[in-house]
Image (tube, rainbow over the protein chains, first blue to last red):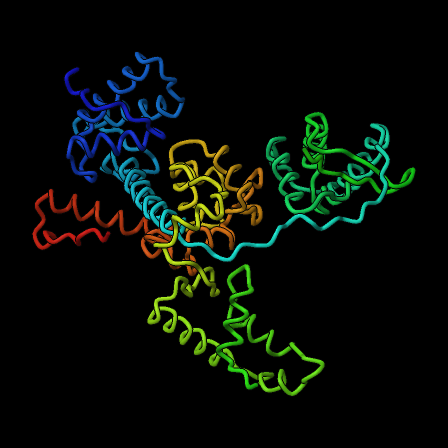
Length: 243
Length: 221
């Protein structure tokens, strides 16, 4: 078996990528994957990656478990198979994986063609924009805001959010700070500043408001943003720090 | 001096830094005025889009037959002048190749998925690719190839939804999303699922030895 690895170890994007590679290498039909053979190959590849001290991402291990599961199900005689409640009776245990592989393969092909288009486009030059970035934004002198002003402003927003939540169904909402960080940076993509209150949507729930605020604090800590105001107790501006 | 519609359109394309649509060109004709010779701009006041499209087509043919070093291409819903490929070596030198680097394989895959399945959440992209896409999404947002188009309010956590931008079409020289490779095949999830399912079913049926099912449709590529 070891002699099979004359192939150079390619870098696989993910488990699906590796599986497609094995299917191609073994010249098997994607719609009729010999699950035992492919599983063994897959496992050998994983151990090879570990042997070479390549970090094996969690996704590869999840796929290994899935393959093992499918393999075990296929080993059972048909009359002893436990049918999943949602799955149709007698459904091929490989089906879900096959569907996923076929779809991914098509996107991979589309990506390949996009790459070719990109190469072609790299040789075609449109007219260039004249020097940009000359526009001098009219600067309002701003003073730094103290953390107390910031918390006060945050309190206002929070109160409004709480008022809206008197009678509401409770359901789980998961806003992550990193999500919000991205959102804030994105809204500052083509402008240098934004009003503090603009960061919070009218419909934002309490938890969303809190997470947005945490994201803002983190961005200030990372020195990506600064908060300023033109007058005491005035509107708070969130300003992008230019590096 | 009498001016030709075609020549005015050509001048606009020459000076423009982005693709121009026939609609935009028509609006320019409708609004432009020359204070010294009002009659001049007035002549073209009510130019129709079809006339502009005709002029563009004529220009395109003209550049092609006369083998100009530039060509007129349809991109991102509009028209723009670009140089022809053989002149790339000199233009690259001239412009010092300040263009951003080519996109990585993960970026291209993620873009293909977003382009064809938008609006789509991160989790759904990750499900198709089988790997996390956080880093890639960040890069694509920074390069203005994708944008946040909203949130999915129907599921908990209201995940952000992404879509492609005008810049995306320009980067790849695509006329529209229909111009995407594999567009018809991959655009609709439901349709894609259905065809894949049928193929698998037919395959299974064939193997089970059912008669009359022996001709499975060839996979379109």
